[in-house]
Image (tube, rainbow, N blue to C red; front, side, top):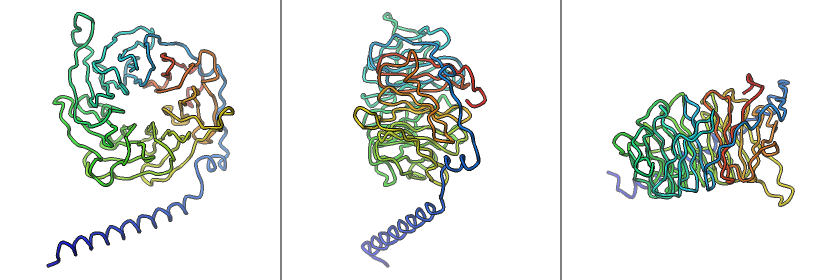
Length: 380
């Protein structure tokens, strides 16, 4: 019978061999990947999207926060937006009228993320208190007009950077954290169902900053981290990441699935957005801008979103720019930061309405802006 030392030695050799085979396979795949989306599209004669400054206009400015806006989310069905700010409040807005329907004062003012439940009846938020708080919008307010916390999800050992409800499931929510993990929660019981990362060797080695759940297969989600990687997870197998995606050279601040659910996009501190194939792990395209003329540095990408067709990629930047990229040809077709009524500070968050008819951006200038499409409905 083999000794413990022999078993450990055999395990180490097997692990080394597996890693070697993985590296050979990665290099072989890279050799076969002889083009990217841009070059292929141009070879097929695809014409770029033509966008005029009047095709996407700022139709509303939502004013009410007294601090930097950090996060926003649309309801899946109705025209409501929830925003989280440095002022320690969540505000629920009617996007059609600009009216506030709720202004929720938080126990911990350092909020970093917010999300609507699929039914639009609850909102979740998280931040430096390392917890995710759930508010039922139908609850009775107290004397001061504040809503009580209906659920408190505690278990992370670091700040909560992102939260998202599982599509079509009011009872399940996933959070990401500075403790290098993601957690799947049962909202009804406030209990953890699964933890992704942490002590497992395939987990992130830096703070997890963002996540996106696959709408076609809600068992799958991706997470972006300060370790400059994205990891794909299966909620049925929490013990290991399904795949790790490399390419970025800085913190990954935003991840978002492509509309077909087979690809996903990323935005990073390295100043680029990238498109990855979920199944093969290939990096399909890099969306890179020129450095600022003043300081010769690339502004960081803070947030991204795709149009419903996937032809457009919206990217918010730390210098106040908001680029509209043609995903096929990797060209900027419009910069909202140069338009009339644009933001006067860092774009911290953005999101598209469920029907794709409007884009909302949030900024450190304390405002949110709603941008309406006047044309290009087929493209959008």
